[in-house]
Image 1 (cartoon, one colour):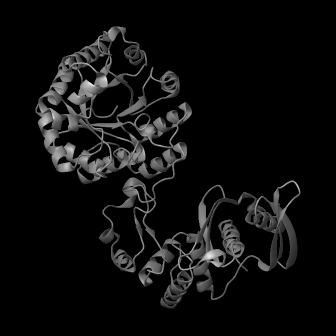
Image 2: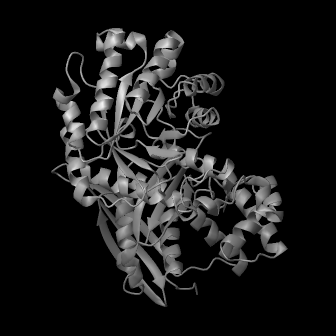
Image 3: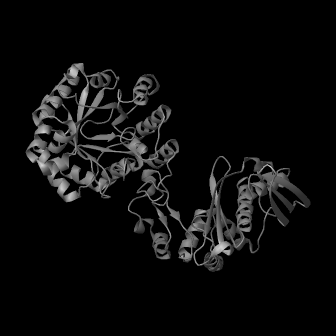
Length: 525
């Protein structure tokens, strides 16, 4: 298990799951837990057994289906109810019977919450904490305490907020996590309060929400002030603005502060783990997330590229490989020669000065028309190949295509596309039907070419985006289409621009098919 001197505590499966639009099944929670264990976190908070059937079922299944190598599973719950012994409280019993070696109890540390939410006395709240912690410790479980609304409580009644910490520690709680539940703190004041809390003798942890955009900064400030237990969520999930992003916290502490939190091979797998969790949660990944976002080490400005060509570290704060990410060069109308040279090298091409000059001019001209190559690497590579080869060379030539959209008597819309192509000395005519014009064109192209290129059976169009470009109006506006394709092993994007949306779609589709054939090893003729 992880070193107990400093805790990395994940609460994705409980606090993170409160994010709007995020709904996890028990199977999802088990999958996320395995990914987090692979990262090497010390504790995984699985949910609140007894409070809802899903979390109860999770802890039941976890006993036989989770084989954790690094983390300990933690059950979350509340202190006993007012006026009831901990041993007789059914929700405390659910924690006791969860099978989790660690229990995290949430307790009120804000005097007004005790008065208005719990509707009991300050003395009874302390008794609830003391009784519940000591009971669970006597039953053999390790206990952490989440001091809810601690920072607001400290502002309201510092003596009482600190007494909550002392009571929990004296009853046997190993950690008291100070919760910025409303997410309203800023780092300087938070650090002062954490320092005051650490003087109580309790081991102090930190749990921050991101309502001011400071959750990660607040967590780091708390560590500087004495916290030895950090809580957060994968990808910053959580209700409202989310929780402290645990990936960012871990990377900052390990790479910037020298903490030994997770094994280096696990840290180098962080980007993959972050994206794997987004697949389970079905939440679109934040491409601009620190460390693990696809744009975290992406460079667009020509000035940056010129410097990176000399030394990549001139515009990067770490080597992306340390967190399993990659440097990416984006090609756009902001690109200079260095950007194009580096991107060409990334794709395996050594460009001559003449090729570079021609390619820069071509990119800037096309982007002025509405094309975008930073989002369509495959289109840029085809453009690069055309430049190097000195002419446009493809696996097939298009004689014509057409699409008909018909509404039937039953009210259904049917699209039919016909393509006439030339490939390998043959003329092919094929017709395909689809639920839309682009789908029909895609099917028609496959019918025409799969007999010559059977690898196209693996090609799949997985995303389709349309944008009306600025400066144009109405149904005659210039339209940009981005198509993302896959062949089961990789994804790539292509772009088309035209006044006609079907024409723009055809451009992107034709490039997607061409790039697929190149990936399959078919060189252009």
